[in-house]
Length: 111
Image (cartoon, rainbow, N blue to C red; front, top):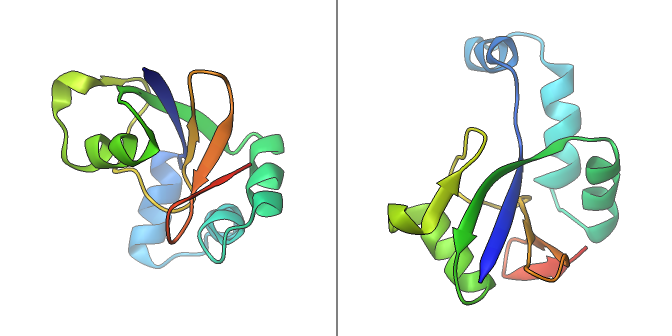
C-alpha cells in the first residue's frame, strides 16, 4: 500500500535562524502546535494553516511499517517529494483511503 507522509518544513533562512539561536517565532509557533503535546485539534489547526507539505510516499503494510521505513529504510520503499526528514512525532501519515493519522509520542492517532 502507498502512504503519504506530510511534514512541517522551514525555509533555509528559518533553519539558519534556529541553528544560530536567533529569533524564530514562526518556528516555535508551528512546532509548539504539533511537537509539544500534540493533539488531534492542534494537528488539525496546523493542517488547516497549511503548515504541512507532502514529504514522501512510502510503500508499507501499515502505519508501524511506515514509521520504520521512514527512519531506517529500505530506500527503495521511499519516493521522496519534498525534503523528507525522519518520520517523527507530529508528522501526519495519510493512508491509501485518505485517512490521516499523526505520529503521537506513543503510536498514532487519527486526525
